[in-house]
Structure formats: structure tokens, C-alpha cells
Image 1 (spheres, rainbow, N blue to C red):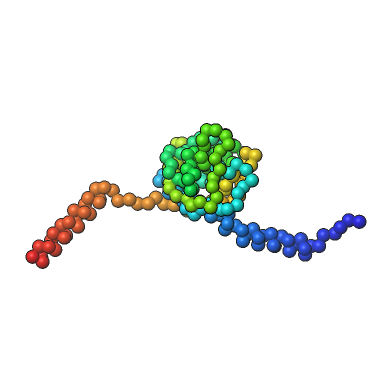
Image 2 (tube, rainbow, N blue to C red):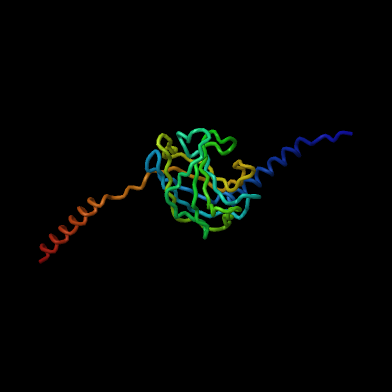
Length: 205
């Protein structure tokens, strides 16, 4: 005799599953990546937070930033966009960052993937429970462009069978560049402050 499922039981299991996922999410989504947009083709990526304690089942050497481009790399394009990196989590230093174009297929579409490549398989495993620090400078090819300031997205950790299917590990945000005073402006400010102090000294004398 066929067993009839209880609709209420199915609904309750769904609700409990959603609650459990929400409760566990902060343990997974601990990474915060900030992309300082210098131009259409250049960003400085900074990391904060730390890797969650839950590991993907395999290939745990890479992070994946989804949809960080406005004008994505060309179809079937995979090229290095890493120019310089001091980004690290614990003693794991990132030394590659590639852009996957819209023709790669699956979840690799419109993606930056980055990690550490020692040139010999297997790749080194990214440690869990370690804080992020440092920066990474990325540059696209002419004609490609990063997402606009204010754009946000998610970060995954790990891959399976050539597609991004690891665990949700955090988020990224595109922000405006930090304004740094030009050297000439600093000199003028210092000279003005010096004159002001000298004038005040004279008045007191």
C-alpha cells in the first residue's frame, strides 16, 4: 500500500531546514572582500573577517567572487588579472586571480577565482578559522570593466567538478577609491601650518 505523506510534516521539515540554514549561515559567511574601484579595469581588493569552520568536500584552495563585472571578459576567456598580492588568510598567501568569461559555462560565468598555485597538484588547502589581511591589485584587459561602485555579490569557497559549488563563505562590495592627498598638497599644507605657527610665535613675543 502506497504511503501518503503528511503535508504538514513536509511543511514543518522545510521550515526547520530553512531555520537551520539561517542559523548556520554566519558560521559559513564570515569573509568580507572590499573592492576599491580605481577605474573600469583596476581594483584594489582587501579582505577582512575569517574563513568559516565548515569545509567544502574537496578542492578547497580557491575563493570565487560571483558577478564582479559589468562588461565581462569575452566568451571562453580565462586570463590572469592578478598584478600584485599581499592578501592572505593565516599563512596562506594568494598568488593567482583569474577572470572567467561568459562562455565558460555553469557557475563559472562572470566570476573571479583566486587562491594559491604552487605549480604541483594537489593545490594547498585554504585554512579555516584564520583571519584575512592584506590587499590584492587586479587589472582587467581593455574593453572589460568591473561592476560599478555600490555593487555587491557573494563569495564561495571550493569547487566540485569544474563548477562553483562550494559553500557560501561571505560577500564582496565595490566601493569608491580612497582619496589620498597629492604630495604637492601635503607640502602646501605643511608650509601653511609652519607660517601660521611662526606668526603666532611672533605675536606672543
